[in-house]
Length: 564
Image (cartoon, rainbow, N blue to C red):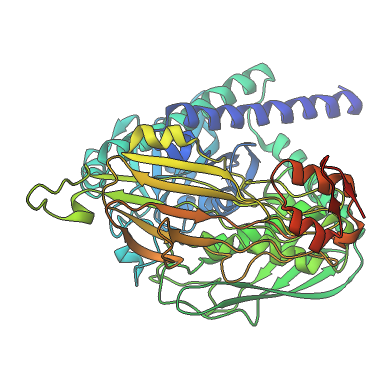
């Protein structure tokens, strides 16, 4: 076969490999028990070579899962070498330092065999609703309080379930059926990928993945280095603040752009917290690399080689390098600010590629009710049935150089907003309001995306609890190039009482939780925004007449048209 035809075939094989891992991920979505997976897509899936290097990932998946899972497969191989694996074996962990950063993420690694020989590894990660302990929240003072801690173990041995493992799993969760079902789903997901891979290898008469892997890695590395070489060399600094728990958390980064790679040093970042907002190093690397890649090389496939030129230095003792056994349950609250921090550096080098800051951190309130909240019923007082549920929601993204930010959209996590009906179907909660939040997008030539307002109660207006894990309240998203800040978030009761932004809190009988999610920052001078676009937002009820006048210099007439 001549080289031109070989190149075409390699490209076809690459496209097939993407289809394989996407079917892997879709299998999990179709079979998962947890709404976090089934409805929000809080998962990752990928294929690895026998050295633990990621060849390809499914399009469905979050950067925090995919990029940290890329490191975790090597930990599995260190304990269970590929040569010892058998068909039907499945290995699992939720170790935050060997997996993807907290106990609520299960990572499963499974071998793929063809003609009796192991040819590759499939891995996936999914966020499950409950693993016991204090539940998903920042209150714990060590990881041992945060839930069931699963080391790297074999959950299926040659197709047979490890009953001792499943006994421990069921007894360690408030939702034993859902948790066990999710483990089966993760294993089925990898099995689906393995079957498709074997069919692909049969079709192309492939005895191993080595040649295809070399093609993928060589092409990806060369393409990434070529993009990096186009950047202006230099050293750039940026910082960003989080509301934190005990005190404000400051993240600092120094980024060095060179022809052969990009180095980031987080020296100067705040120290460790006593609560569960700490970030394991792998999760820090995952979101830092993502923040760089979406600006520098967004069109190059995400794999081991395309991430290799990014070098991350995380000082010991800082909140981005939490050692065991520090609490890390809600590491995303700080970790999902990292892409905005990376863009703060890159804005100084390639401003035309970078967005303004966005709401960034998911607003995914864990809600709980029943005996663990209200205790024993007293007299005629009714108590909700026991439930534990998480709903995923987002504020607005930052404005883009040529377009407005996205409304109520998860960036950088990429998870889907969960339909309220899906949550109401599995728990006795009611979403009385879920709508865009007017005047929350930062003003600018292109404005920030709007946040949203959510009002949550329970059936019968009975007492329930929220384990608050919210940020961007005291430190709203900043604009760039003269753009305004997005609106900061707010956490209240409908009666007006302000709640803490982090921690376990009771919503009393007859009250409802009222969440106002942050908006994204604006980009550029607001006075340069097209008056017609301002008028459109006013007519849509998204920008008030007063704000149109004060921030954009636009007067709205009786017909709804805008003039300066």
